[in-house]
Image 1 (cartoon, helix red, strand yellow):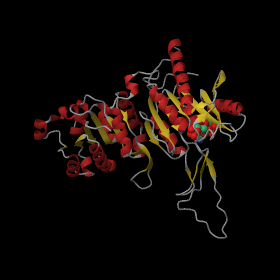
Image 2: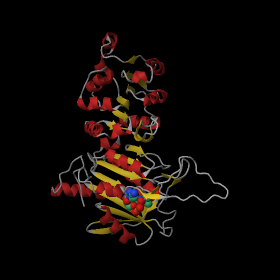
Image 3: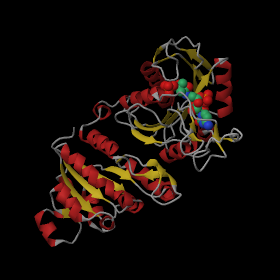
Image 4: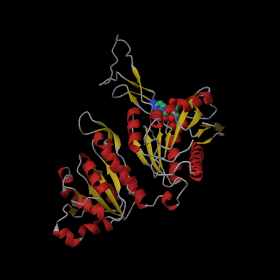
Length: 429
Ligand code: PMT
């Protein structure tokens, strides 16, 4: 619970602005005071009257409102807040923030602020993926902003889908709470402090029709445990997760996706990174002839045939980037036989630096199975050899892997072979 915090919410102009009404209610239920600044465009989507009714405060809309300036002033608006939240953050508003423009009340308040904001973007996927927006995101992250979302999915515009949906209210609240209660990593600078780590986790769902899909048994436990261990080691973590039934790890920015194509887009949007770890069990194929409607079972009719086409290989795509490749790219290999042999081949074929191989066969000897279970037994394979670790909890595997990552970056720093950076230049083999 945030309780008794003063939250300044800056509402940008987008269809998702309506979610802010729910956000305000939930924040106030927790005992917070919420003051709101609305851009001119935001007022096209929700009215200051409804916002004022929910906040029980006046709503600030105009930079040149003499009464507002006399009473509180745009400088004090942000100074008197414990946390500044921008939701929905439009491409335009983020561009202004990145450039330091101050030509309306929202941008002036943000420029005059003495605290790094929580930014929840929402926009059309192409606007989000546009290099100009991504440059602004990189700049704002470098300036200390915390991003929550965007999530991937269907957009309000018919036929549009991809990354760009405003994060759901519980995610927004979790991000606000994390900001107002200093994360452990901010108190103790860990060995991955200043590093950005991107992690994929969980399965993908590849639709057959609107109600059926192809999936696998991955639970996300291993990938999420790595995200948690990396946060504890001080890293800024972006976790891109397929559909799972476990909670988002505290302190990580989580992006929720369904398909391999969405996962690739989310990974690309999360770059640059120092380290990328591909723990997700991504479907190798998707259905080319997926049904637009539920495929009906008809008496006497032939059993439907699914035509599969290959999915993009996310690990291989990122490992082969000529520009912006993370310094350390780690893949996983889920094998049911010839574990080391197949995993070593994957290390070569996919072009990654390390592979973590695990035995996912039914007779792996691990109770409950590696996929879905709590324990794992892995081989860490590098170009110059491999280590076989004993069976342990997935959280212990995660901590040991994070330790290896930190050592590797430390060795780089000591040998000065690669320059450490927070922008994807540091790395190891
Ligand atoms: O989620 P849990 O229940 O905790 O289980 C953990 C796990 C068994 C899923 C995990 O430890 C694991 O092994 N993850 C990798 C699963 C997998 O898809 O392995 P693979 O051998 O098929 O793929 C090799 C690598 O390529 C993986 O890093 C995978 O993320 C990546 N890949 C695969 C296909 C694809 N289209 N794109 C990819 O990026």
